[in-house]
Image 1 (tube, rainbow, N blue to C red):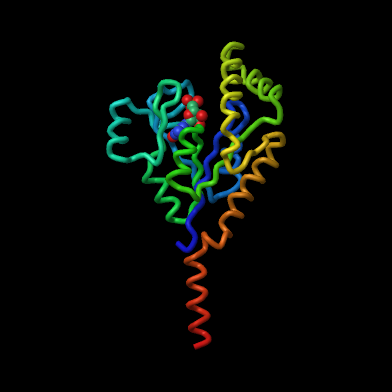
Image 2 (image 1 turned 60 degrees about the horizontal axis):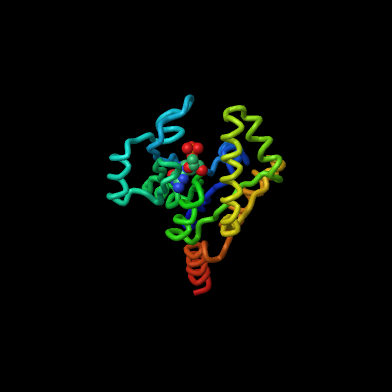
Length: 208
Ligand code: 5GP
């Protein structure tokens, strides 16, 4: 493959709509692949093993850590979450663009391992709007929502270290912006070295 795929990391405030943006990227364009994470947290109603996550025991997860099978992993609210390494590397090598939907600790680990990864953070336009979106889900108590907002305030301290902040005000615009940033990245000269080498060879052959 002359151009490897782009590794894009998506994090975001809970309720900001990062899952919706990722679903739309998958639906609207055919070149994205989303990694299915492994976790030790129990499945929630409606979640399917192998689709939402690979649900495993702590022992199984720790064996994979020991075998260096994760691209990154983190412990979040008492459970492990990790990105299985092999399928990500396979898709990138085949030229596909890979999306990881992960939290901030994992995102920064990905940056260490893959400095060329693009890190996106999704926010709602205002604090009040984030609160409204969490309330309209109707899945959590007022106290849980307050907890999520407090976590968001804390997380806001590190999001300046992401590459791009996507403001999810108009969903279509946020999806289009994300797609175009990922695709534009591919045209960077530094990512096109095999293509440049081929063109040089071809031109040398023609002009010999
Ligand atoms: P939830 O339990 O609500 O599905 O996920 C909790 C958090 O873990 C979310 O922020 C989610 O993006 C993150 N997460 C999901 N999979 C992974 C993963 O493979 N690695 C890391 N570091 N975080 C993950």
